[in-house]
Image (cartoon, rainbow, N blue to C red):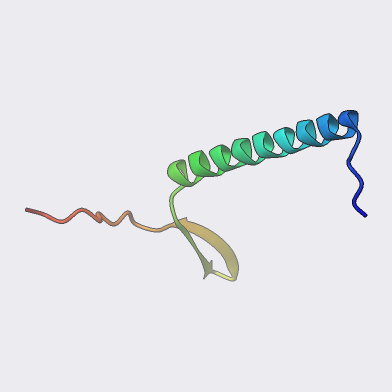
Length: 64
C-alpha cells in the first residue's frame, strides 16, 4: 500500500529541491571563477620556512 503525499508537502519538497539546485549552481560558478583567476602554486621550504610560490605559467597552445 503506497500513500500519496499531501500537496503542501510536495510544494515544500519542490521548493527545497530548487533551492538546493540553485545553491549548487552558485557554488559551481564561484569555483569556476576561482579556478580561472588563481594560478597553480607549489609549496617549498626555504631557510626552514614553508613558502608558497606560483608555478610558472605554461603555454598549452601549440604553435602552427
